[in-house]
Image (cartoon, rainbow, N blue to C red; front, side, top):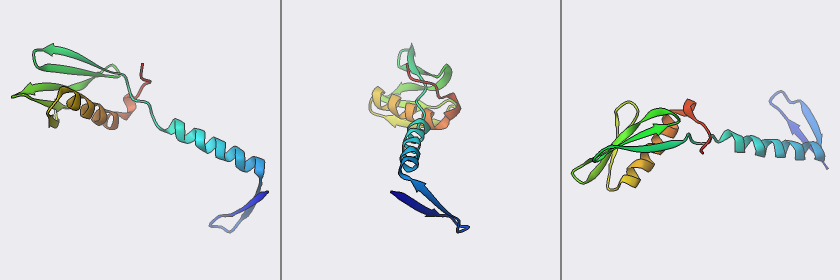
Length: 109
C-alpha cells in the first residue's frame, strides 16, 4: 500500500506502508509528550483559615477562609474565585497555576 500526498507547491510524495506506520507512531508519541505534567503542588496551613500553595518550589498563592467561604488568590495576589469548599478552591487554584506558570512545570511526585 502506498499513499500519495500533495503540498501547496504541488509536489507529490509517495510513502510506503512502513513509513506511514512510523509517522503515525511518532505523531502519537509527540502528542503524548506535548501535554506537560503538572508541577508538584503542596499545601501548608499557615494560620487558622489560611493555606499557602507551593507550586513546583515557588509561591503559588493562598486560600483564605472568609465568612464560611474560601477565597483563592494566585501568585500575584489576584483573586481566582470564591468557593464553598477548601477542596474546590484548591482545585481551581491548581488549574489556574498550571496555565499561568507553564515554565514551572515539573513531574508530579
